[in-house]
Image 1 (cartoon, helix red, strand yellow):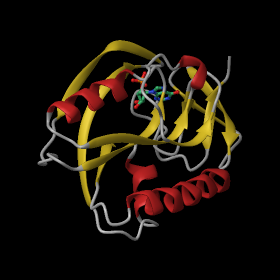
Image 2 (spheres, helix red, strand yellow; image 1 turned 45 degrees about the vertical axis):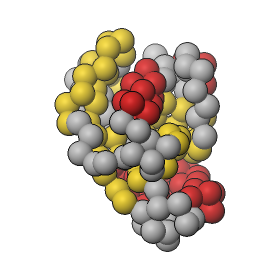
Image 3 (spheres, protein in one colour; image 1 turned 90 degrees about the vertical axis):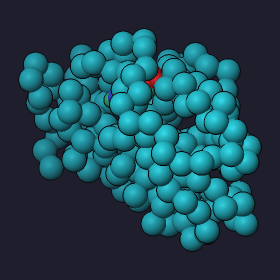
Image 4 (cartoon, protein in one colour; image 1 turned 180 degrees about the vertical axis):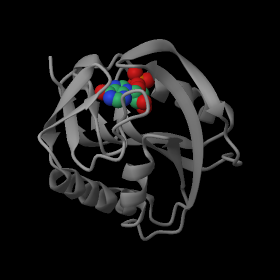
Length: 179
Ligand code: IMP
């Protein structure tokens, strides 16, 4: 795959290789398997972006569990809109269950707060998050982010599930917006 990719008006430069992402996912899978063994957790995938990360992670988690999906949206282009739209809601009884949200990226934390509130109100016993990437400088929430693959600067990225207006998700490596 080339060193740069262009979608519409923006060019992105190769930034993190898939081998490094894979290694972090393997590390996280071991930690999560250990924490949730014998707890019968529910893994909650946030569509669409987390599908790649979640699939790679869950294939390495060998414990009894259930898997479900929700779809929320907060981004338009390269900017957060500040409000969360629930596009596909929760279709699972979470009462008394341990829930691990699987995200592609934690940016401001608004999506995490939204999901955490929703799951807590629905009766979940415990809600945590595992994210492939996180932008610590952009994070504004008080909730702990329990499992983080890669901490990255506050710059827009695509690839490995992350998109720019729907494009770039299928790039295996992560690319950063060229300024
Ligand atoms: P938050 O609610 O601000 O934490 O943002 C989380 C959501 O914003 C993610 O699930 C992504 O959909 C989107 N997002 C945030 N930063 C990026 C980025 O750099 N590239 C692509 N999507 C992003």
